[in-house]
Length: 205
Image 1 (cartoon, rainbow, N blue to C red):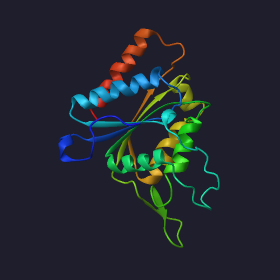
Image 2 (image 1 turned 90 degrees about the horizontal axis):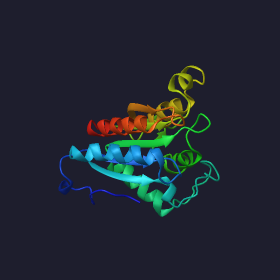
Image 3 (image 1 turned 90 degrees about the vertical axis):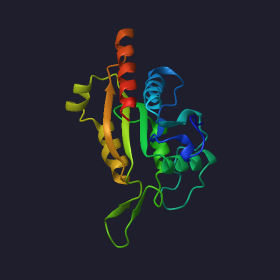
Image 4 (image 1 turned 135 degrees about the vertical axis):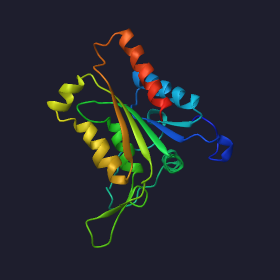
């Protein structure tokens, strides 16, 4: 489920602790290649990169009773929470489907970013504490829609959801949102350029 150096200890070196989360259930493909290129760039700078591939994890993505009752976290989700606490920087790699993030990624947030872990409402107040503050994030996002059309015609709903209502709500500051699009008509030359871009982003993590 994870890779990279083991143990959050000084033996890992002085590099940044990076957790990469692949939000698509699909095995292989462009998202996997982009993530691998980013990780290569980051590791070349001495950073420690670990990975969570949601498609390989075993968990129920449905929050069965909302927040009314607690739902036992599966071992993979407990490990995910541990790694999120370990990380200084998060990298989310995922496609946009139907204008939003994949259902599996949304289910991951529903199950993992829980009250008491990611945020905490204050008593008798509409305000809340952001429990994951101090962390940054990069988003590597693939789309079939041209970016200008996604932003100006559709209003970029997936981007707003990730940056504002999920990560920002919990205190995670999105540093860079990189779009790789449109994928469907792209050439091999274009995809190779995207991989070089992802590697360059990783080197600046």
